[in-house]
Each structure stands twice: as C-alpha cells, then as structure tokens.
Length: 267
Image 1 (spheres, rainbow, N blue to C red):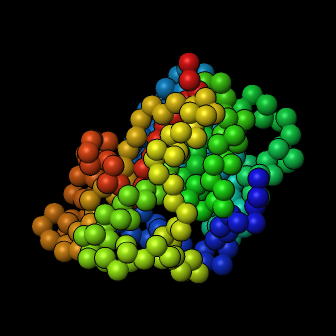
Image 2: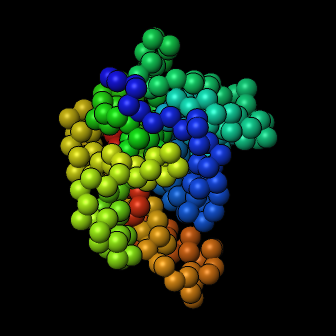
C-alpha cells in the first residue's frame, strides 16, 4: 500500500482548521456525526460493560474521539499530519485528557509495524472521517478496517460525496467546469478532493471485506446549496436542526456533501 500519494495537511493546517471547522459547516458536520454515534457508543458500552477500545484513523482535529476519551473510553488517535495532531493535542490538553489518549503520527499503512499484536482483539469502534477521498489508493484501506475491527465492532466511515459536487455546480451554473473532464482542484489551498469515491464503490469495497452497511446519513444536505441566505438560513440553530431532521431521510441524505456510513461484520 503506497503512502506517497496520500494527502498530508501539514502545509495548510491553519487553513484547514478555519475552513472545515471554523463555522456553521463544521457545526453541522459534528452535529450529525455525534447524533449517529451516540446510540452506537451506548449500545457497545452496554454490550461489553467496559470502556470501549476506539481508533480514530486520519483523525485531523479529532473532536469526537477526544470527547469519547472524556467519557472514559480507551482512545487511540492517528494522523499522518504532525501539525494536525498538534492542534488536536491542544484541544485534548484543554479538556484534561491529553495523557489518557494514545497518539500515533504515521500513515495508517505503518500500524502493523508500530502496534504489532498489541491490539490483537481489535477495536470496538473505528472512526475514519474525511480521509478516504485524500488517499492515493482509497480501496487499500478496506483490508485495514477488516484487520483492526473487533469481531462485533462498528466502523464509522465518513467520506466526500462526488454526486454533491456535480449537483452544487449545476445549481451554481458552473457548466464549463462540469464539461471539463480535466478539471482538478488546486490542492495547495482547496479542500475539494480530486479523488472522491462514490457510495456504490465504498459499499462494494466494504462488502468484499465482509463488512455490511447498517445505516447511511448525509452531512450538509441543503446548507451548501443555498446561495441566498434568507429566512431560516439566517438562524444557525435552525439550520442545524433541519440538517439533522433530513440527514437520514431518503432522498435528502443522498444530497449530503459527505456521507456517513456505519458498518459491521456480516453475520
């Protein structure tokens, strides 16, 4: 599995922090993910009657996994970017859980040589949010999930939805962009990935590893599509409430800029 083609956000960490989590878009993203994961964590905790073993791979700022560490779970946070984990550690320190978290600055491909058999039982919950679309070979991470997920564990996989890119540009009238098969985002600053993968691809890859999708939610199913902010759009709390309402309803969830799937081993 090649590491050289995987995106490292070290050069634009400050831009990433402001762009992704510095406003309402980030608040919506966290609200939907937390809603989806709350019941999962409760069910797994009741099932095992102990703190969960949790891995956040490609964690970035790791807001959710840091909160899970606050709840007493055994959390390992990983990212290829040293600078991103510096930011995450600041947050963990402020919350008093810095030393309760295991930190791994490395590509996911190096897990085996670093951890060996120390996590042989696997993780009860693996978080992988907004990493897939930045990997040079996204399908290569699927065996990683199968290797490190416990027998009854849950995979929380959130990834960019390429259909949303097309739909938004249709609404904005960017037909020239859609008619240009050679179009690539400027990844020196842009956070629009050049290698997004469709839900159908992801579902197929997971199935090949014996993993079955149990639920799908959409993140930002309408907010990004409204060029005119009027009415309820001027109230952030109302926007989040409506995003949550429609995030797991068909057909609206399929319009999400990101899709969040929860998967487990097939029984």
